[in-house]
Length: 129
Image 1 (spheres, rainbow, N blue to C red):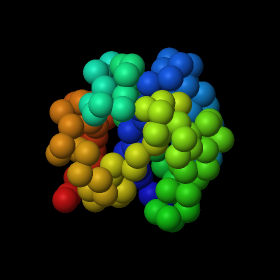
Image 2 (image 1 turned 45 degrees about the vertical axis):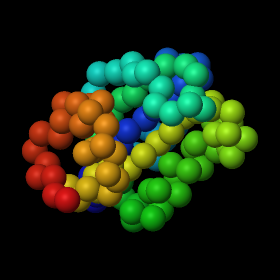
Image 3 (image 1 turned 90 degrees about the vertical axis):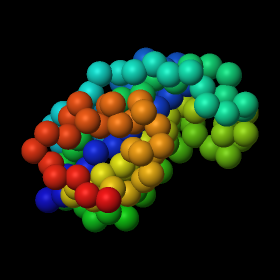
Image 4 (image 1 turned 60 degrees about the vertical axis):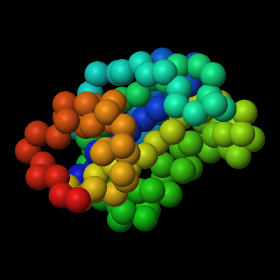
C-alpha cells in the first residue's frame, strides 16, 4: 500500500472539473484527506483564467508508474491535450507531489499555494526531498 499526495488544478469549469476528477480518482484509489480549494491567478502568459487548486492524500495499491499512468488517463479523459495546453486551457491537471513521503515534484518548493495545500493534509507523513 502506497500513500500519495497529489495536486489537482483546473482553469476551465474549475469547480465542476475538480469534483469530477475526485470522483474519477475515487474509482481507482481511496482518498483519505483533502485540502481546501485555493483560487490562484494564472502563472504564465498563455493562461487567462484563475485556477482552482486542491491537494488530496490517497492510498494506492498500484506502483508509482501505474499511478502516474492513471493520472494521465484521467487528464486525457477529461479533455486535457496538447491543444488545450497550447490554448492555456487546463480542464484538469493531476500532479503527484509526494509518494510515500518522498518529494517527486519541485512544485512543493516552487509554488506557495502547493505548499499551503499539501501542508494542510500532510499530517502523519514524514516528507523527504
